[in-house]
Amino acid sequence: MTAAVRVRSRRFGEPNPRVPHVVMAAGMLYFLVPLLWVLIAATKSQPDLLSSPALWFGRGFALFDNIGQLFREDDGIYGRWLVNTALYSGASAVGATVLAAFAGYGLARFSFWGKRFFETALLGMIMVPATALVLPTYLILSRLGIVNTVWAVILPSLLSPFGAYLVRVYVTESVPVELIDAARVDRASELRIFWQIVVPMIRPAIVTVFLFTLVATWNNYFLPLVMLSDADLYPLTVGLTTWFNTAQQEAGTRVLFNLVVTGALLAIVPLVIAFVLLQRFWRGGVGAGALK
Amino acid sequence: MTRALPGTAPKAGGAPGRRTVERVPRRRSRGVTAHSLAGMLFVLPFFLVVVAFLVVPLGFALYLSFFTKSLVLGSRFSGLDGYLRAFTDPLLLDGFLRVLLFGVVQIPVMLGIALAGALALDAITTRFAMLYRLFAFMPYAVPAVIGALMWGFLYSRTFGPFSGVTSLFGGDPVDFFSGPLLLVSLGNVVTWAWTGYNTIVMHSALQGVPREMYEAAVIDGASPVQIALRVKVPAIRQAISLAAIFTVIGTMQFFTEPQIMARFAPQISAGYTPNLYAYNQAFAYSNFNYSATISFTLGFVVFVVAYAFVFVSRRRGARS
Image: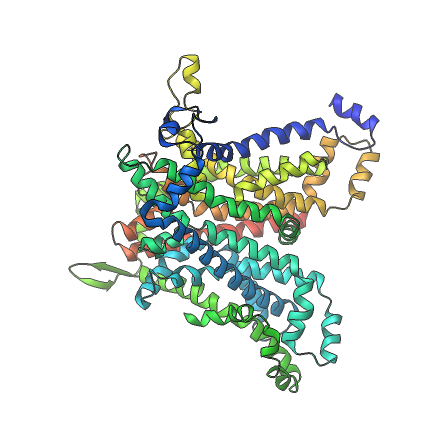
């Protein structure tokens, strides 16, 4: 408290910068340790992984050997998993975002029969836990014969009630009704109004929904675990787990822990880069959902 | 099921606006009806996905829960027997209580750290703060599977640096994978993954609070800590409750972390969490009807808890 008082007299109303800095330094260390560990561990060969200090480098630098081995193991199945993951998350994110943008705009700027009911239901849908839907969806899709296909992962991932809700909030706040009416007077079609006027105005919300559905599918484990049984269709999350199981069961006979670690590192790099590069887009969007 | 696909088509088409231009003006000539029809068409693709992947699965789970299947008798109607079994199943109840205990401790701890981080971010705007925001958010981009694996390695005696710390002082190595510490270990994985996300949500909300609110408090002689707790925190109560609701929903579905951690910790049984139990009932024991019953019950409980939470926090917000 005394420090705070001193600072207040120094700079009007500003808190002592030392307190938040200490809080942050401690937090940063906590958030970084596991990531540092995986970064360092990926540079170690299997014997080094077991013998050298956990948070420091081993005797050799085996990162490139590990990466090479990673893409050769099981006839290069890791590359397939990487492609699958990109495909599932890319297709789901594009689809879910388009659906959410259409629906959010439709709910925000049109009135039609059943809209009020649907909007209330939308709030409820956000509260339905996604994993409670996975097993029943599996049972339905298995009757339709499309489990163990890419569709079994992509189609259920198109559902994003929160995305639609976020777009609806964003349109209500940032797209003036007058603008749309003016465009209608000029006889622009509804779809043209949407793509040429509304979409550019709600771009932060669209980027946010896209990024978050992308991450949700990229990181999803339960859905592909339930839906897929063919290893060639696995995404990274399920694939790496199967390797990890093998590594644990056959400890010593096959060299796999270094592959699990290197595979884990390569699986998180693309998303971390995407989030760092797109920071200024998603930050505004996260807040938009929280304000209501 | 492929009906859900048209939603993806416009984007893939590249120039979607042009394709449907000739269709819409015809409807417009019908006045008000054209307006509402256009609105419905905007919502329709999303609506179809909702029906196919939310309403139908829930309905199907409910339907299945009224039946039991056995090798001898085949599928037969059993009414509410499934629910009677679920509500008296000690394994399921244990799992439910475990998740409840987990949530009661982990959620406040995590949201507290997130709030502290958000307030710190709001107080300073240096490069250091920007760096913190970035690093705190990074775990969110890490799949839960990989987060659980990384922490599993870090906890383990063979790979990790932590379990040996106590042996420096002559004690036994810490076992993060058994006893009451197991739940703490799992809680740490979840806290690590989600604190940053919640920090960003709360920080965005803080940035929306008008500065004049603080200025008045400063003139009245309030300390920075008082301002943080008495002005800033109440101002973003909505964002905090929203973060809490989503955390509650996420916690009730607890699956990935315990499922992965089970490879390190044999104590994690098939019924460690309700969701793990539902999964194992389906895929380890082929009890699809009972699995559907658990899924539906779990979904229903989460829904009711979340809705009650919204209701209570809204009422409390309205009162003050």
